[in-house]
Length: 230
Length: 324
Image (tube, rainbow over all chains, first blue to last red; front, side, top):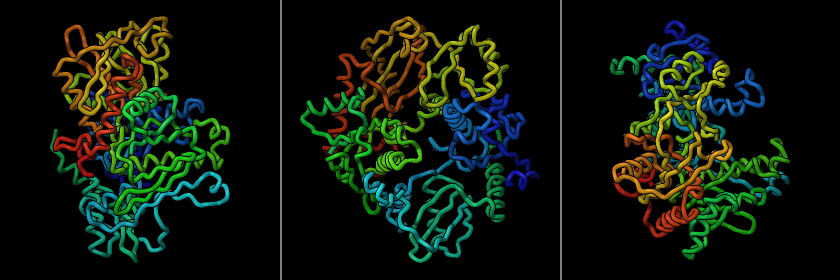
């Protein structure tokens, strides 16, 4: 969808299937001389103007074209390869990978709470409960760290220096602070609307939203323009 | 309090546990065999707290000063595997692993090794780029799905090895004439080829500021599997040139690893090549007498954290340690 929307700017979709096509040449000590395969077509990496990553890793389910017995190994190899390739690109990458994830920040709820605490931003404490197995079998709930359910959620989307979806200057400022501290250009930050505390954050901004999609493209183009010529 | 997590039969973990015992330190041991008899609560707010219950042992996570983590994937526990992915046992094991790693990520303790710092070792070419930035030579490396590119790389370097890209263990092997036909297979998955570098293998273990070096003398391409090729591998203690030793210490510190196993090779011309940094090194294989020097150093490091002397607390420490 996004590739089609950005086709006028040469947008193309790289999928796990492209990693099983002849043409990839990743030269670790000379990354500028590497070639990739995008949408089935080999392309020199110097022609890639920017990358938006929407995968954390490659899973076995992404590889129906690989023999079942090999999928687990191939998925791990492809993920490790993409970590290196994405990190080597000189063009803007939103967001840069942070091992083991192909994008960042894919942090635990606990880590967001600590960052918020350090920045003086109110945050819902993260709680995680792994009850004894016997209790789990008897129906005791297991928590995953995402804290208490909250019905009213305000999501603020940070794209570069811009904040979308924030009707509130303070929440926008906090979201921007979190993105800056995490060192990323894209961040979806969720706050409790009523209590005004941080619930969580991740790089999965809603690119189905026209305003967000346009802002992301604009940010990639700005970054590309600002990048020193090589 | 010091926390150990893993299996009692794991060589490095057993060696560190024994070294702590010899120092009179009784560490809490999260025995992975008891994963289905364990539970955990973690709360992160103004502070990091919670409790871990393993069998009859209860650990206050807020009182842990240092932790040495060498867990295996709990899904490989025989009872968990038997129960299968849809079972409550499976969910429990996965949840407990995730919770302990989440604690390790935010704990106000010395963690050997912090998961975020260790994660870079999951991609060898990514790590190679980091090694170059830290002043080590790394072999010319090509990762490709292009059989022609692989052939051209082979022709240029004459001797080439191939190895896994990820941290999944694979046997490093040289390309031979037998592989020529199979090169077409690289179109299925990016494959890593590396210039063969002749020389003597060195394994360096950095533990805090301490450093231990051994050479491995073997004709095998991958000395870890020398037996399979009908050869042998002999480990000998060795000294490291001061300049190279300093680079190893700086590298481990820059990667945020209190403990690191660094694979080096010294060429006949005296150049040092670095192949990778292992964030969870099986040091017992290299240490002579077996496992004692490195294990004792790790035990010291853990005890120092308990005594308030935290590795990496200085101005040159990685930000991940300074921040807490």
